[in-house]
Amino acid sequence: MTTLSSATFASHYPVTGEVIAQYPIADREQVHAAVARARAASLAWQNLGFKGRRKVLLQWSNLLISKLDEITEIVSRETGKPVSDA
Image 1 (tube, rainbow, N blue to C red):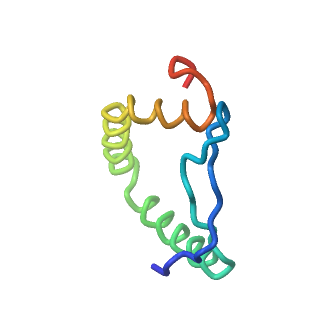
Image 2: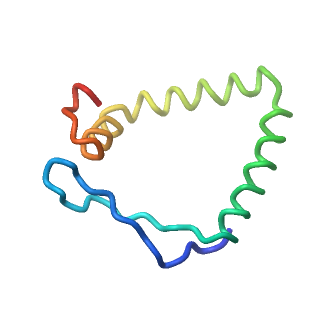
């Protein structure tokens, strides 16, 4: 995997305008490489079959549930909504 360019964009907390994160901006070559990796992953995903995909999605679901508090806090900060709406 290539290193992302040094260009970044800021994510702001809508309530105060505070910068809460900086994210890298990919250049054209990095985007093309990411698309190629996604295509390869799509084939691998397809080859898992229904049972294999089900197993992976159940694991993913369990991970999301275990991180729910962290995820809602991030969504709240990124959108400016109360945690109850995130």
